[in-house]
Length: 551
Image 1 (cartoon, rainbow, N blue to C red):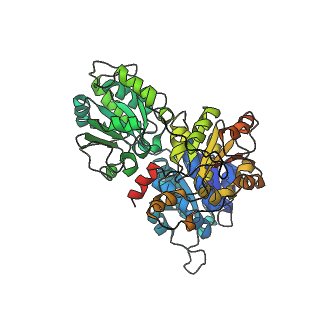
Image 2 (cartoon, helix red, strand yellow):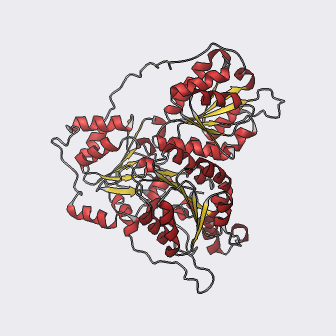
Image 3 (cartoon, rainbow, N blue to C red):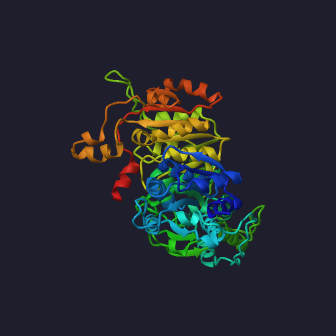
């Protein structure tokens, strides 16, 4: 059996059921081996789109994503999506064929490339192909983006046949987390807040019980939005996206526990959100994450769920409810009512800045657009948001049912990854409506993947927040009088472009223009619907003001 076939079989044996990519000569045999084993291959229009699809799939499905590309330019075309995945710690394996001869026009230094973007690098050897492929998968499953080098000559080499089963790895001995310092902090606090991040996405149940036991309020980083959906003490996203009420309450906390969150500048508003007097505790499975973005007072090493369960056990809290526990002091009926009344952006009053069209064409306020869509769309949805000036509107005005229902492509701050990420999310959860929220700049960059969207015939709604500009630059540089011709553009009929790809297309300037969306939602939804929403550009977003402060 050739090495390429062994690699495909091993990855399938470990659980790979979908592979995204663009096939060329270098990855032809390994991709076909995966398909022959039973995996589904999703052909993208471009390797950059394929990388984002694998990323979005992995985040939504909660499993390892797989990307297959050609050697040389196939790898470099995927680089931006690969970097986003690595910075997001997305579990993903990249099948990267290698031309190892330095004089080959396809030669690139793959180990250096992986290291440059924060990915792990593994290489398949002819004599250990099954072992190496399995090791790469297991590394990804632990939360890494792994570039798996597949030297062309090694792929063609003959090796021992492999048909499984997957050899079981030796179990890691369980070590009880040391939670004494955390317990002391929880018992001393009167106004505790939990901020859960990407590393806590699987820990809703124990964190909720622990918060109930100690009277903590619940918040999340943007990467974990939806984790505490439906909980009456949920403040939603901390940081730049925080509601005024969430910012107020976090700003008066006496204890902040970061669960699987590094408390980066986004989550803390450059450190200003958390009061200087608060005790800050960081819980993470990786000690290297401790204090990377701000000083912390206490650290607890361990998986988030395990730490929370250990704390619950020490507090005498069982699975069915609290034992003899003294709770914090601010879970009052009055605060519960305030959270119900003002805990969502939908409940925060604003002045609608839609333009009526008396001078020029009408445009719609992005908040008004987002609220109207939230009312129209089914609750069972996956919301995928691209990067850009617009990104807070869908992130905060569109509710999601749970943590797997939200995907923000913001770790690398690259515009143009959201559409393809949404396709991967739709493959992962075809039972849900996937909503891709993108800006006009990001849409134009990635519109070629509408070909893939039409081919897949998945329920997909693309909402373009179209201000005919790179809005972040307009609102950042415009007030200082800088020329903006390089970042503003003539109005373009993006709905017509979408129809050219085979999608349904709709231009929206007012809430009334959304009426056809209701008909599309009625089914069968086998053609993607692209909404070109002409949004007013009257103001810059406060979250981008925060972002530019970090440049």
